[in-house]
Amino acid sequence: MNLVDLWLTRSLSMCLLLQSFVLMILCFHSASMCPKGCLCSSSGGLNVTCSNANLKEIPRDLPPETVLLYLDSNQITSIPNEIFKDLHQLRVLNLSKNGIEFIDEHAFKGVAETLQTLDLSDNRIQSVHKNAFNNLKARARIANNPWHCDCTLQQVLRSMVSNHETAHNVICKTSVLDEHAGRPFLNAANDADLCNLPKKTTDYAMLVTMFGWFTMVISYVVYYVRQNQEDARRHLEYLKSLPSRQKKADEPDDISTVV
Image 1 (cartoon, rainbow, N blue to C red):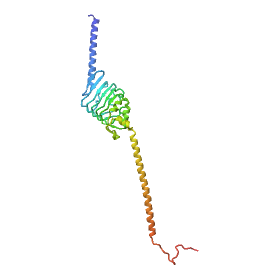
Image 2 (tube, rainbow, N blue to C red):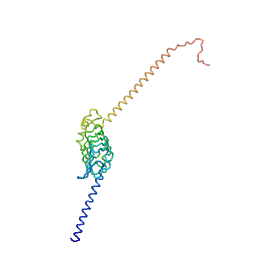
Image 3 (cartoon, helix red, strand yellow):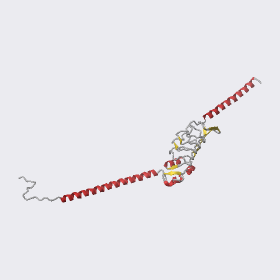
């Protein structure tokens, strides 16, 4: 074996050793970045699985290269603002079967346009901010939540124009209109424009208030006139009851004429 062959053999060995070392570092780095209680694996991207991990909140140390994130079956109660803002490669987000009640206005900022699937089913969501799902391109699953059907929910679902299936699966637990409770939201929305109800209610309240004030004013005027008439009648009767005074013949006039 000449020197060239020896050098090539050693160079190849060093390259293989260096490559293995780099891969070990990358694997160790990915493992060390995995949130506590979660499992991380690489399969077409980084998959982070935190299912049934007894989490009470969304981890804030999620790896930026996360593509699939499973946070289902935990005890998470809210989705804070911009909690996913650094996960620019996130495609699937599963938050089902938690106790989520609150979703902040900018909860999905940074991932709204990249998400393909968002699962919020089987939680305790009653209402969300009207802008919470702005620009969301994902197929959303929000069924099995105690939704309160009102103008805000109507605006939210209208902004999710591609999610017709979502609207069909939303059942009104309560509603601004009692007759819509227990019905699919889509039916309730077709029956009435829920965003016009507050305005109509306000108009009716103003009309009733104005009518009440008008009635009070008229009643006061009638009472005032009648009271004055009664006082005038009593005064007239009093004057009539006074004894008339007869002037004596020799009594001088009160007004004397000076010549």
